[in-house]
Length: 90
Image (cartoon, rainbow, N blue to C red; front, side):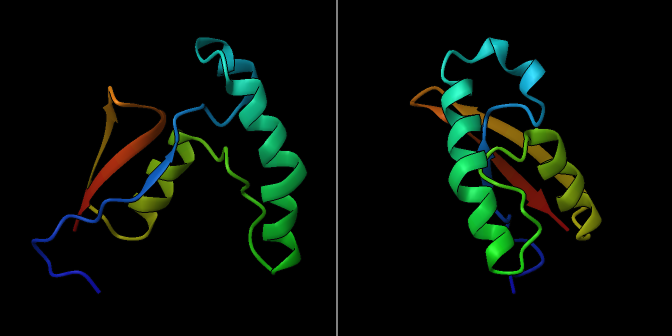
């Protein structure tokens, strides 16, 4: 458990949760293919929700809020074009 003032820094692929919105990322089709053919099936096989790798920034923000984080900020790092980083605080 994190301390109440310690930010929780999860991250997710920067690709949107819907393939139709992936035109802004040239590598989005690769991420969706890996997500569908490997990550999602592994998650389902282990009793998970089957979110896969490309579960989307929108769903990540929603799930963090539902988990009780009052403040959720999405950050992008220039040095990492693949991931979106979150700063989530209670």
